Length: 205
Image (tube, rainbow, N blue to C red):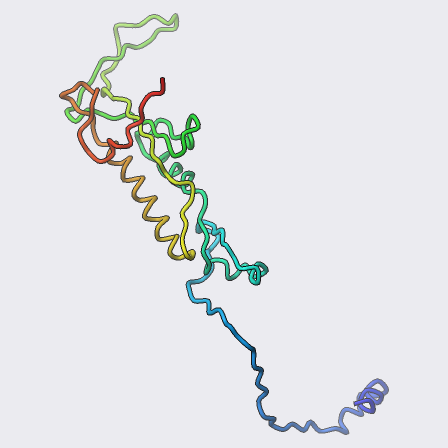
């Protein structure tokens, strides 16, 4: 090799004096002592999926590509649920941890199960009400305090993600159910019985 390097620097013609010769060699085996930790699971979370906070063994803290295979949690469930509730047509207010109460607070404008209407007079420039106006549906305020957890925990990301999706669907369904109709028989002071009643927000003293 030293002769090759010396001659190669002088003239490229010297390359032609050599012929490449190769031979098969026995495979080299490396033996690593255990114990081993097999890692089985799906691919790491995509950027469009909820993030994962893993509880990694110290030996793997420098290997983020394995985090989703270890126990941990997905944060931000309340914000994710609130974001979907804000898209609802009758959602008036949606707050996370409203008045220091953990969870998601929702205020809805709900129609009666037997539609009611009332007359709304137009307002003039001087602030006085006119005889003209329009008839609008009568709506009732409906307030829910949903005890949505702040995060979803699991033995790995795949399991926790399935639970995350199930919880988002559950809490959205609760508000969808409460969004149906107010009871005409009680004048809007009560509501058509359903599961969402357990999340009825109570006014604070």
